Image (cartoon, rainbow, N blue to C red; front, top):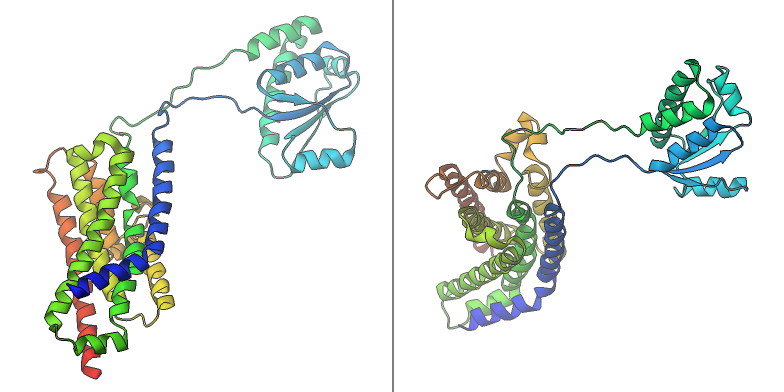
Length: 383
């Protein structure tokens, strides 16, 4: 088992890249699990803004407006220095600046409601419309009571009571919609990291054995070519199973009881099948990469293109029909389809479509391995 031992030593030498991507994926999976485990209850709350108010009015309406805005927003003083004001708005320390002029109450009661207030916001900011909408609602309510002949103090009091009334908000949800488990999100991005780890980790080891001098020495050894390949294949199987085992341990830690359900087992099988396909793609890439930098480029090309076009990073529902038809020629597409259908499976017997996806991914693995083998044979004949 000399070749197998050398395979393991070379694999250990190139462990840093594989471990880096595994750790990165682990951090992403932990962040995803925390976000999914947050409360699913949908609530509505008003947005709290930072409003700087300069109230020069001594009347009841101006004071009432400031009191109303203070209930749901943070009221701040307007900086006296103009440059300080600009900096505060630039760094979003202040969202809106409101100036209530002198004699605002008297002029507002007399019907001069238009353009009495001066408001300033960052150009293009949506906060201006939010604040101005609150102000306009309050002033419209107060104006209604003033036109009815009430005193300013009474109009402000009744306006405050009316503005405290809140409407009941009900969110419309589809009856058949169900929250997806954390296991779905954990396994959704497995194709990307499997492709990177296999091409960089497994591909680097196989690339070492394809070195011209080392390959020539191996051909002169007493060990037959068949035995050498068998031990290399065993090393590839060991590496693939080791990567798969690491991710299954991560899945057990992050998804909990999900892995002990029918869907968890199907998800694990889906990942195992794709790991075989990723190993075949690594074998395919080794036949064309002459140096490690070229292998790094190919790992990025295959992992990113398969992830974006196959529905890993971009949801399939967002793709057009033409793009979906093209994505069927990518193995990660069938992995994503299986991962989605797994969440609807209740038993192994009712997972026929999922098994078909497994088969398609295995056929892709066979295709990549066969093309790589053909290229390898052609290179051997030309040597």
